[in-house]
Length: 130
Image 1 (tube, rainbow, N blue to C red):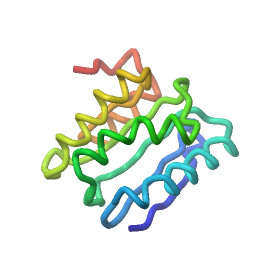
Image 2 (tube, helix red, strand yellow):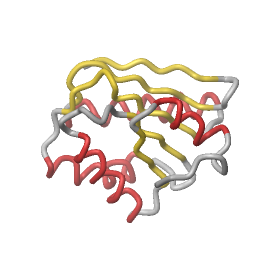
Image 3 (tube, helix red, strand yellow):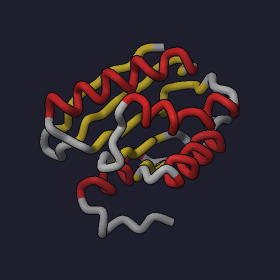
Image 4 (cartoon, rainbow, N blue to C red):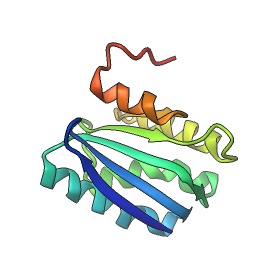
């Protein structure tokens, strides 16, 4: 697994693109790198682009992610858009994560289209979450 971070200055958003198999062991260092990049750029907005990734986490590992985020210092003020293709066999695991994160107070949303995720940050009032 590898990941790339870039800052979309025109939108004030850090983008984390993930490639290969994302497993539980790689999650923590990846999130720590994203948090550091967000701090450098002074943003509280992150797009996690999983369109080119396979998710190698079990359901139990997925359930533990909100707790891991909390331990790593992910703030409730940070907004995270997670982009994954509808055809990804693990899309339901990401939906479960979205629900569990919301119960913890996080504003982390699942999108199946990258433009919709970016629009959520640009003008949240224009995008109706269904």
